[in-house]
Image (cartoon, rainbow, N blue to C red):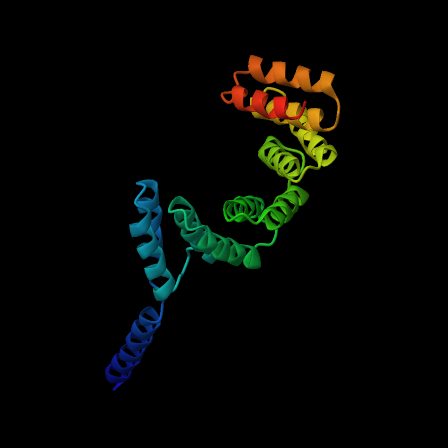
Length: 214
């Protein structure tokens, strides 16, 4: 009698374990396969794996990491509107995500939305304003303000970039333009010479822009 009861208990326990396993999300393997395909630069195939993972559901693999994989694939494929959608999904989960804010700004700029790009860059700077990782943000904001014909704002951000990384040639190249627009020819000439000395590859284009400002 006791053996029969034990057998019945074991049977019920086995059924419960089987049911639990059946209900466990199985998308982690597909997500990791997506990561591998991304590293191999197979972006379309990586997307397929990521979407398969999303459909199956995740267990240990984090949702925001999956969204980042999808967004990065879309960026590599030049589909920036889709990038924006998925970077925003990351930020819904992790509002304080420096990299997502940066990439969102890049994606907005690729679509021609300068206002949203600037908003995203500035948001990123709120979370990491004092590191070398922020230099491209200060530089990008400076270049956008040049495009908007706002040299004093451009100078503010570009001088900050120069403070963190004085050996970045593009910072000095943009400063040469911003200073010239702000009627500071001596500073412009000095910045241009520094850009040349650091080997800025498009120095002729910068010189052409400066000539137009004479």
